[in-house]
Image 1 (cartoon, rainbow, N blue to C red):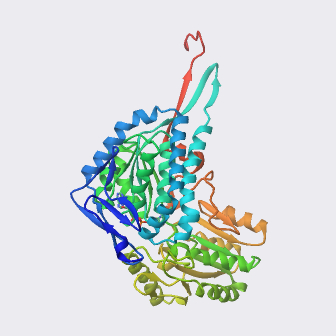
Image 2 (cartoon, rainbow, N blue to C red):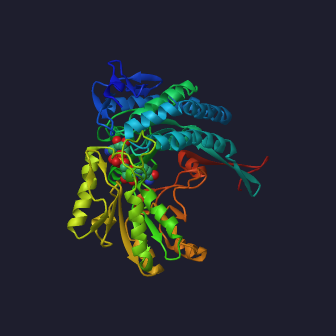
Image 3 (tube, protein in one colour):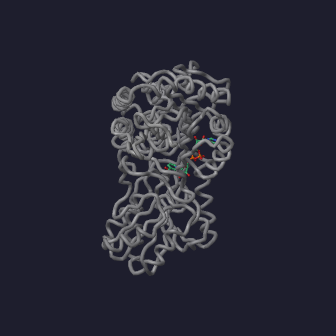
Length: 495
Ligand code: NAD
């Protein structure tokens, strides 16, 4: 795409691939600028997409104040009306799928075809799902010695929602939709590398009739405005998706107020391939882990293969991985787009170089491709305690280890500090049950990958997260549950 397609105007609106995107904050139903800006760059070709408002604690405070002011009105809005507005947001997303898809791809470099066909429709689904779920939330009623207990899901208050760059609008809507459905107000802070679709979501929500101040979007660096949000005494919930080091900072910042936090963090998930598996399927599952150029928290980046089939597995995997096409994510024939940022590319390359120096062998890839891409990589000859096996790379880098039996498979699979997901390839359902029961993971997929239902709990064990969201679990987090006990008529007290 020629550079001229992205033009920046002084009025705070960037034209990104022909779509007008406001680059200012959205606070209290108005566009608000900051004194400073930061430059948003496309990972596809390095072109400047816009000068984005660089939030300071003052704008974070203003957004929390707007969310606080809007809270009583939205909390008191009948469920049916809240659900109607959420559905209108979903309709607005559906209408703008093409625009949202091209802006997201231009901003984060993930495949346009998946944004178009999968991700953006899923964003709309997130809003519809939580609208529906809100209407089915029951009240629990029961009796204690003639007294009635009545349990309600009360809105909690303003929520700070903080999201990463690898699936921006998808992860934003995954938090915004249940928070709003629950009757809360929101301050959303998207990642600084991908600020654009959050701004479009503010437009869509305003157009759908969401009252001013119910959803606020502040742009900027987490290191500059993060504390102002997460330490704020009026913020009642913090939902964060991102890295472990940032989660630690947020936990410390939220601690004095004891603000409840939900953390969806990194992973180093295993793919266990048993000798009784359908080998073709297992190879497909492994190659699928290069999706989004490996920038997926759930990716099964540690491939564990039973010894007798390891050689054949590597042969078939190598064949398939070498046929993957890397290139422009707007091209339908591309399988892997660019890495989000030169800094991320540097980080990936550092991991691989250190692994190779420590004795690993790159049977596929192992190097950069041009300025912005990293080749799909498979490293063998790695030890369980090696950095490359223990730490999240967040790039298209897999390791392969072999195992002799189920016990060893489980030991290797559970042998990191993470516990986000695990994938099993086996033809034996009894084995699947036995192994699954022993795995530490928030999600286990058996002979499949990335099948996600919004009704299911989602989250990670160990350092992969704190808490679960999804289905009713989202409401558990975003609501203050209240039990009201009422005495029977004429009750005279305990005496
Ligand atoms: P990151 O932790 O660097 O940043 C995430 C967000 O936190 C950004 O918006 C950033 O601005 C903000 N932030 C940074 N410092 C902050 C602070 N002190 N206070 C408040 N906010 C702050 O993560 P990233 O590099 O953007 O994302 C990649 C990570 O996210 C990977 O570890 C990946 O596994 C994880 N992730 C997890 C899931 C999941 O569902 N478990 C999904 C996607 C990504």
